[in-house]
Structures are given as C-alpha cells and as structure tokens.
Image (cartoon, rainbow over all chains, first blue to last red):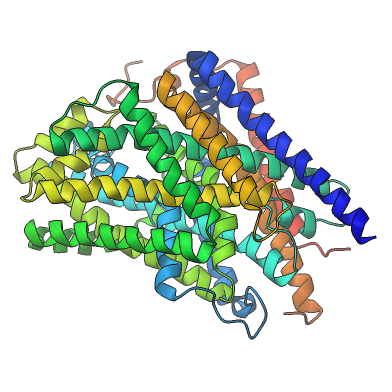
Length: 512
Length: 47
C-alpha cells in the first residue's frame, strides 16, 4: 500500500511539473522567436479587456479589501492558521520583512520616484491635463498609494489566506488550486479547475519572475554605470549580473526557509530603511512630513472615490496603463505569493494576518513614496525640475529616476552601492519566494519541496530571463504575465468563494 | 459635432454598430453572471 502510494506520487508530480514547464516554455519560446508578434497580440488582448471591463478591475481591489475586513472582524477572525496552541514560526519583524520584500520587491526601487512623477505628469488629475502643479502633486500621491497601498495588499493577503486556511486548517496541499479542489470537492468540475489553476499559477510565477529579473539586470547595470562612471555595454556584463543574482536566490531557496528567506528579508528591510532615513534627514524634512500627512489622508480617504472612477468620456491611456494593468499585475503575482504568505503565516490568526499584512506595508509605503516620490515632486515644483524632465523624456525607462534622487545628495558613492545591493537582494528575495513556490506547486504541494526541484525552477526561470535579456523582449514577457492575471483573477475569486463555503461548514460543525 | 473637452476618449467619436453593441452587452452580461455565480457558490452549503 505504502509502496504503491510512493510509486504513484512522482508520476503526479511529473505530470504537473511537465505541464507547467510546457506552459512556461510555450510563451518564452514565442517571446524569443517573435517578440513583436507576442507583444502586440497580448497587449491588444489586455487592452480589449481593459476597454470593456475597466470598471470591474478598478473596483475589484475594494471588493477584496471588503472581504478581508469582513473575514478579520467577523466570527472567522479568530481562526488560527495551524493548531490552536501553535505559536508563530517567525518573529513579527521577520514575518513582516518577508511579506514586504517578497510582495513589493524590486518595484519599490523601480517605481519609488518614477511612478508619482508619471502620475504628476500624465494622469487625468496631472499637469498635462491642465491642472496646477500643487493639485497635480497631491493627485499623484493619491494615485500612487491607490495602486500600491491597501488594494495591492488586500489582493496579496486574500491569496495567502485562501491557501493558508486549507493547508494548515484542513491539512491540504500547498497548491494554488487547493482552495478550489477542497472548497468545491462536491462539484464535478472542482478537480479539473484546480489542476488548471496549478498549471496557470506555475506559468504565471515563472514568467512574472523572469520579467522582473530581466528588468533588474538592466537596473543593476545602469546603477553600476552611475556609481562607477564605467559604461557597461554588451552582453558579458548582463550575463555576469544575471549569474550573481541566480547564485544568490538559488542558495537562498535551497536553504531552509527560516535561514535563507529570513536573512535576505532582514537585510533588505535594513538597507531600505537606511536609504529612507538618509534622504529623509538630508532632504527637506518639513516637506516630507507634510507629504506623509496628506498621503495618509489620500490613502485612506481616496480609496473609495478612486475605486469608483473610470474617467468616462476621457482618453484612457494612462488609466489602462497604470491602475488597470498594475492591479492585474498584482493578481499575476498572487499564485506564488499566496503560497509564500501562507507558508510563513503559520500560527497567526486571520485577524492578525489581515490587519498586519494590509496595514503595515501600506504605512511603510506611504512613508517611502512620500520621501522618494515626494523629493521628485518637490524638485519638480520648487527645484531644478531635472528628475521630472527625465521622467517626461524617458516614459519607458522611469526606473532610473531613483538614482537621480540619490545623486542629488552627498555620499552617492555609498548610497549608490547600497542601491545596487538593494536591487540585487530585492530581486533575490522575490525570486527565492517564486522558486520555493514553484517547487512546491510541482511537488504535489509538500511544505518542504526537494531541493533539486527548487534548483530546476531556478534554472528555468533564469533561462527565460536570460533569453529575454539577450533578445530584449521584456515587454513581451510582461504582457504574458498580465494576460495570465486576467483569468487568474476569476480563479482567485473562485478560491475565495471555496474558502468561505469551507469556513461556513467548519464553523457550523464546530471545527473552528 | 465638435468635442467640448480636449482629451476626450477618441473611441467615443466613432459610431458603434449594432453588432458591436450586442457583443459588448453579451460580454458584460456573461461577466456579471460569472461574478454572481461565484458569489452564490460561496453561500451554498458543501454537500
């Protein structure tokens, strides 16, 4: 009996593993062979979805936030993920650091300055739509935190809860499809939809990560050029950077989660906080404090009006490119992030998870964007305007505006090196959580997947990133990640539905 | 007719055919039905 079970298990794993590899491979081969056709076709589909359903995409995070709030403050809030007497596996600081760095990752650096400035210029409340600079700046912060704050973290949190509830409370597998398989076990379609969810999830995790790694390679190159003054051209430097990042995240992924991820998460938060304090103290602290105050108001007060605004009658390029695409992009991250959040949240109650994982990162992001984005806005309104000019002239390359802020202060040799380190460690943290999740998904959901599976996924993801770096097809891979996010949004909502029915049943039968 | 605001959505100035309207409406009805079905499932007991 035991032997039969052991014989059968790898077969199941291999089927899922190869289906996921084929799914990922199909899109990456398309990206390399015909990047233009991939990019145009998929972005066209994404835009068609936005044209017809932007009213839902913009409202969806608020609905999810409402569900999170209901779960946390209803009778279900006291349910603990794990046994009733189980203590949390990680300290609150390390738990928050891991949640935060895996969830936002390198985006914090990519968009810390560029995104507020982009909204300052291009959003319907921005400068180019004829608004005055001060109201355009306030609107920019409101839109930035609408995209990065409560909505993003509600999506991540619910993704973690649905998996965590079933794995720790019902002893189910660590798989993205688990909530559907278990929650709809009485439906004939439950198992099939769950399998589909697992395959799509593995593809989404691998491709989203590959796009991020590819982008990170360009950033590290540009960072090194800015710090050292050396022009890094050609593929050798890109490959060397990719190899370094690969080694860091593969090592972190094969070490036990407690050691690898915890160390990376802690280092990351310390570097980020140091840079934040440096700019906060060296810059116009009075302006930063004012921006923080008004951004707190915007984050919590504007979420409802922003969720009900789809700019009917107005030209919607900005609306589709920023809030709509980014919300779907957050959904694309949930397959692996959900597993990861569930994995590290053992021993915490639903109320603790919801309140901490939504509020703490949002508050940190308010401060982060108010300082870095706030400096960019201050420079645009009362300074040289060099940073906003850069963003206006390089709309597809806004990432480097972060370096321009650091260059505005003394000790750039030090902060520049920390900037490069931050990108590498951020990328490594996200990539680590992605490959851990991928190996879990393709190892039948076991909590500690075999290290060789983790290494294989590390190599596959790096190969896709490598192909994209060599062919310059990042936009195509991003398009794949966004297009996968659209159906995955419905699979996520179905998972939430499955969790609610299971919770109702468990509560009725006195099991929670 | 001249648009009264400068940055109006250009797609609004192109006349939509009956076919396009119906397809769009069916898409939105299907979408709403899907959301409604997912919600209904959440409050249905597991058999």
